[in-house]
Amino acid sequence: MTAKKPITKEAILTALNSVSDPQSGAPLTDLATIQGLVLREGHVGFSLEVDPAKGPALEPLRLVAEKTITDLPGVLSVTAVLTAHNEPPAQPPKERPQSRKPQAVQPIALPGIKSIIAVASGKGGVGKSTIAANLSVALARLGLKTGLLDADIYGPSMPRMFGLTGRPETDDGKILKPMEKYGLKIMSMGLMVDEDTAMIWRGPMVQSALTQMLQDVAWGELDVLVIDMPPGTGDAQLTLAQRVPLTGAIVVSTPQEIALADARRGLAMFEKTHVPVLGIVENMAYFVSPGGEKSYIFGQGGARQTAQARGCDFLGEVPLYTSIREQSDAGTPVTIADPDGPEATIFMDLAARVAAKLSSGAGRAAPQIEILDSGE
Image 1 (cartoon, rainbow, N blue to C red):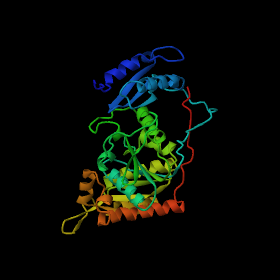
Image 2: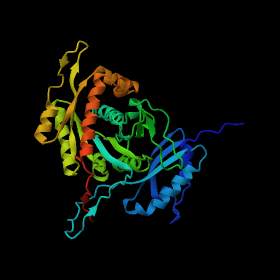
Image 3: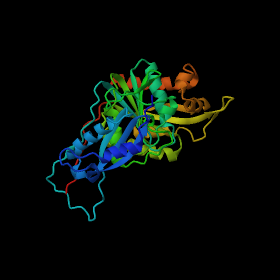
Image 4: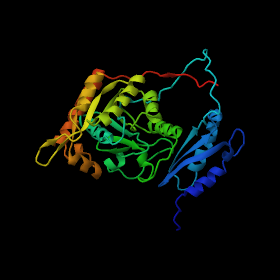
């Protein structure tokens, strides 16, 4: 018996080029540009960049394109999204009419999830993902049904931190099952693409991917979903802060002023989007030498002082332990590798503080945010 040939990108593009809009009959290639095609072990993802004015009307075209690829031999799942890219106006825009009513940004509905926590940082390189991973494990060890979403589209790291391989499964080709490990439900863009693949995506594509990783994943019943946010305060972060009913946010920073300046920007973003800040965590607070001596490499107490100045809680210090880095690289969080060790105890204490805040109602669901229509 001849083995079936695996699906190829060329076959997918050929199939898409044959698709026509079911309403107008126009070929897909006249209405959309295929962007960001990803293929991994039978799982396919792509976006259709369309004219913003025609976006909503082309949803039937997206459905036909998705079904066409789903029906190809060797395809296990398909994720197709519509995106639109507005070119900058050639002339300054007209004055916005004063009578135009504001439009509300509709939140993403996530039934079954009691609390959602964003773990954020104003910049990369401060160990945010390490905090998010070990905090999630610690919350699960406290008995909470916990999920972890790796929302760092450009640099997903959870697959490596948890030693995850393979691809998420799906029963219907639309809703993905999160990976499960150490009592957590985990989803990451890193599970859909090669680890070394560069995610060169525009803002609308990132926003669509984030929305789908929330809505099109079978999270089930959770006490808490931890979201490892992308670093910074750009479009992706605002999409999550405005559309996801966040219970609260945790801001991670290292002690030095160059990191704290960015952390304050992150705090300001949450304040403007009315997301409660549960507190600040100081990562890499000090280095512990093999002899037990503490060295404050990046300064001392900067995050604690920032928390006091901004009127939010200081949730604790996480030292720069070699074991935390080694276990993260090895795919076993330190909270699992040495659950009774001093490193894990730090994260268990952090999780206990966060859990207490959730049970006391310290956070809340983000309110509906209003933005003005773009006008003419």
